Length: 308
Image (cartoon, rainbow, N blue to C red):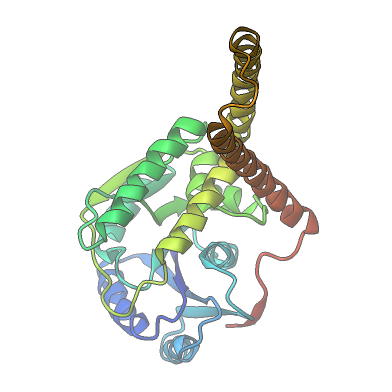
């Protein structure tokens, strides 16, 4: 029989894990002639997430768990789950039930037909999400798709159903600075998208603040395009040309009107503007240098404290 591995990333999810387990079991019981394993990855939670996972493991041997030595982030948790999974098919899900388990039978059926290597999910609405967050999310996808050669689907979730071949390809990418939405697209393979309306968390609070999402967006931009470096160069060229024009204008003005010391307020504003642009460009270069520095250190992406 085919085996499906369900990888569930958890960080302070003691309120949702049991609810998730009950819902996923309803779906599992309907899917006959298929073996399952549920892998909970505890990403250094500070609550009783690990204890709940251990209790479920004692009651149900298809439940397994991995616990990190500290919080390494969702990207590390997903990678650990993919490396630990042994199924013919692997799916990534969140414990908060924002990824509907009811889609699993359809996903499995699509891949069994052999026409696709992956079934991804995307939200067509952002109901329940702050308007400002939705606005910036849409802007991010428009921006990165213009700059990057790798297409990233607006509203795409990490919730996807993949063949073993695709999973192995993702695992082989050992980069430290990970942005999975981009990696899924980068490895290729034929993907079918299932759309659904946004579902709010069943319990608990989101761990993704606006600032964390902003940093994650920067991670994606730096990881999959060097366009910001080109933009910084273009800005430098434009400013250089403007400075030449300004010099010529000042020389002509001085020769004609004899007023070499006028315009200090405007000059101060120009200096502040140019300095700000220079710092911005240096910051862009710094982001790429920082990521390069982290990659060259070759530190482990995660450290496992215990597993079963």
